[in-house]
Image: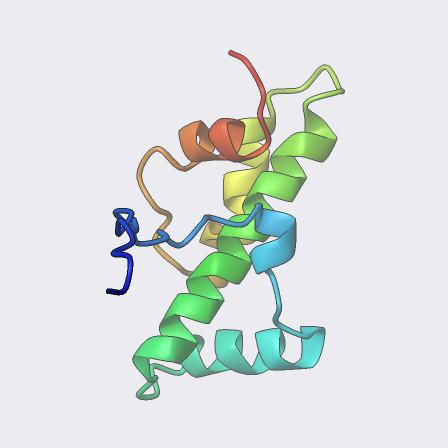
Length: 106
């Protein structure tokens, strides 16, 4: 008789969130195309929207990280330079998520 083996419960592997530096896989040329498409209000696919949002968010978080060393308040400066100057609506509480991703303590 064959020996029965115990079946271990296999957990589904959840998708791990990559740090923003890793999730930004959009070339500069493609990024400019996506920005111009959104500005001209052309129809964009869901994949294009998500890649543009993640690229903008990554740029915002990197800007915060660079300017936190200085004396000025980096939040309005980065929000202006990344979102508002391009005419895009910024996400709510964007800076809170940046701190989580870059493992910074408030």
